Length: 110
Length: 121
Image 1: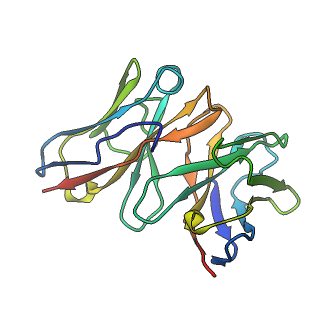
Image 2 (image 1 turned 90 degrees about the vertical axis):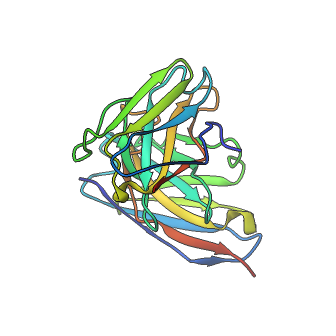
C-alpha cells in the first residue's frame, strides 16, 4: 500500500494528451514539492519533473506538472510510442520523515 | 554529473544480512551537496524508499524498515553502504542507490543502474 495514490494505468493514442494523477495528504504533497519519475522497461527510474513543475535539462516541454492542495498531476502532450513507461510520483513526507512514492502508473500509447 | 554503481551479493539466505555498496564518481560524498539514498523495487511492483545518509552522518530511514536498516558512508573510498538484517523473501528486489540534492528534500535526481538481490536458501 503506497502512501501516494496513482491510477494503475492510463492509455491514449499517439499525438494525444494524457494526465496522471497523484493523491496524497497534508504531510506530503500538501506541504512539500512533488517529483515525477519515468521508468522505461528494464531500466532505472529517471527524474522527469521536480519542484512540482520544473523539468531537468533534456526533458521536453511536452511534459508538465501541477499541484493543487494534496494532489498533483503529470501531463504529457503529443504522445509518442517512446513515452510508454511506468510513471511514479514522489514527495517528502514530513510526518514520516521519509520519501514516499506512488504505486506507479503504466502508460500505454495505443 | 554524479554516477552511481551498486555492488554486492546477488543471493542472500533468509535470516541473513543483505549488504550492498554504492560507488560514487563525479562527486564527493563528503561535499555536503547530496543526501545518499537507497531505494528498492520488487519485480513488477513500485518503488520503496529505504533510507539515506547525509555527509554529517545523519540518517533517515523508512519507518517500516528502520529496525533492520543501517546506511553508512566510507569517505576514504567515496562509497556508501546498505545493510538490511534478518532478510526474508519479501526483501527480494532490485536495489538502487541514488542521490537527493541537499536542497531537494524529497527529490531523487541521480540513480544507479540497480542490482538484483534474491533472498533464497
